[in-house]
Image 1 (cartoon, rainbow, N blue to C red):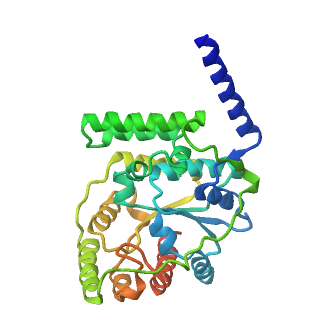
Image 2: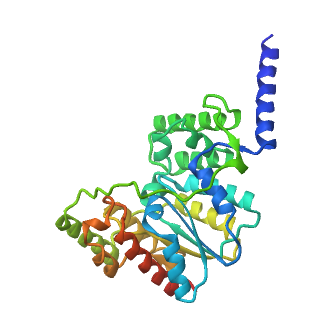
Image 3: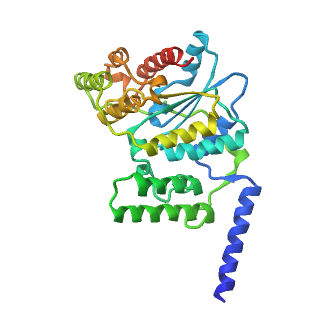
Amino acid sequence: MVAWFAAGIAASLAVVNVRIVVLDLVRPTGLNVLVKQLAQTPRDRPILMLIGSSFTFLGLDTAQLEAELTAKGRSYRVVKFAAGGVSSLERLRYLREIERRAGGFRPAVILMEVSAYYDKEPLLQFEHNLFSQRMVDMVDLETAARALSWVWATSSLRTSERIRMSAQLLQHLGAHYSKLGIKFDFMKYRKLIVSAPENAAVVPDPKLSNEELGRSLDRAEVILTKGEWAEVEDWGNRQYDAMIALLGRGEAKIGFYALPNTLGTELAYAWSFCQQSARSSACIIPDRDLLNALRDRSMWMDISHLFGEGVKSTTSWFADQIARRIP
């Protein structure tokens, strides 16, 4: 009797998964919408792709960047795979999906945001959003394997924490493939509506006076010009190498970057990352001129994200850096 019951459950799950594959069903998350948007990118010009988190999503204007690069004789179609809280695990998961759906999606230039928060603690967002649609969608077999390698080979977690986190990852992996334990919310991929992201409703709240901002940027300048060492782990480097192998295939021009913020740990990590010989030739981090241009609190959404004229100034500076550093 138990065997027949188990067989019935297995058969039902098989039918559900076959239906999902045949009908090309996906969870209607913002990242799957972004996958569709990027998979539909016109190939009329070489593609310059930005890969990052909210720093990139909020801090760079792709239309302005594209126009300024064109004016400098660099005709690229600029696209970005960026959203709030996207760790290197999640980036790689959905870049694989873009490559699968786009068929030969090969950017000419790939620029990747570096961040201590996402590189050194890749499962923080996972822990904060357990069993959400987004986290269950993220944890496929390859993502689970990479996450478990970080838990057991790289993290400084206690053994009990490693066991707990491993169990959570395996639960999400099971939910990803079994479709049990979460809301059954899918729709056909072709019906996903691609629309421009809305940022206009966000009200900036930097929580800093101009004097406090000035002191924070003075500190940022010291870190980024004189240097402050932070550990850069091999696991994070392997994640970047995997993204390059997936999309670059030895042909794309590769670069790394960090955008202005007032977080010392982020700035020190960016500086340290760019000291690595394999990364230094095309690594873009804020300089004195840019930091001096951002000393008005109206240019900041909060202590780590740009806003309004801050985005415009940073995008112009970024275009200059790309033209100078990417052949």
